[in-house]
Length: 330
Image (cartoon, rainbow, N blue to C red; front, side, top):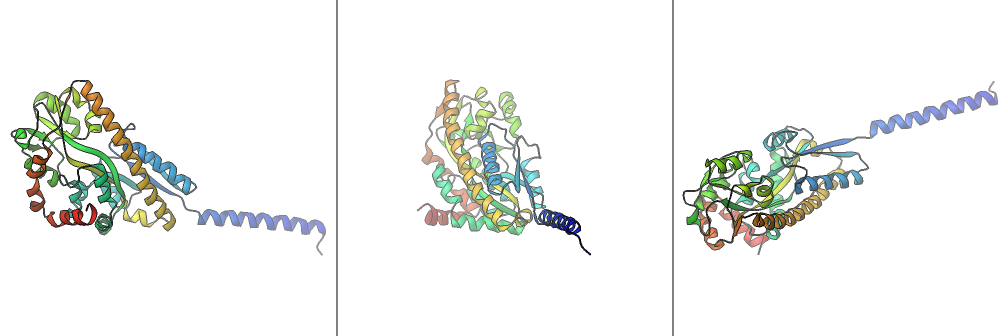
């Protein structure tokens, strides 16, 4: 026979079990995700600041279920290492360039082609176009997912101790440039001798005469204090360095669809934010480097554009270039 006391006790036990069941059930259903973003640059760089904005916005929109951790200064490894980790399924993202991805999908290297765009606005149009989105989606076959490709790092210019106004002025000049074929062939077409060298070795390389100069965007030039070993920044703007935030397809597909949409949307916003900072800093750094004695040269851009036209045909980019000009920039 049940007493009021026993019924009350049983009810309390039942409620307790029910609460524990709900908590246990929710703990099973709840899923937390973590993405580690690695990059070569430091905490003052716009790319880092953009990644931190991405972290803040994604975590807010997912109530912290999708946690983002940002690792500057190659703490997680080199760009190539991170790219490989992402491909293998690790929960990492990397800010990388089209030159590296061109080893996987040659057509995407068109973004690094010389004068495919001559300003930030145009190169942004390219990377946000349906045409480029369709192209970058082909990388999924190789286990890469492009979250966004609008992380602008600036226009690259020639850094020398000799004034450069036309391509002929680069003849005989050993210029450090990254190793991707499109960049090497472009620099050679403009008259220089492309020379592979780690970025950390550029300063002593110029100082010791191992190389005659380099080509880079203002934020990199300033950040490495190259203004101390060069006399001229020749504003050729031959490459508009637009980079992308890339993860592995396996990790991306593990996210709920809602989170997939959030991280893509916020990645584009963060890329625009980082790009804005890049442009502002580039203007500031140029003025400061000029004050410190570097001469800013405005070369004959038409002559440089003409010098690289053969590169498109040589690399099989002629049709892609025409498509971009007609469908995106027209």
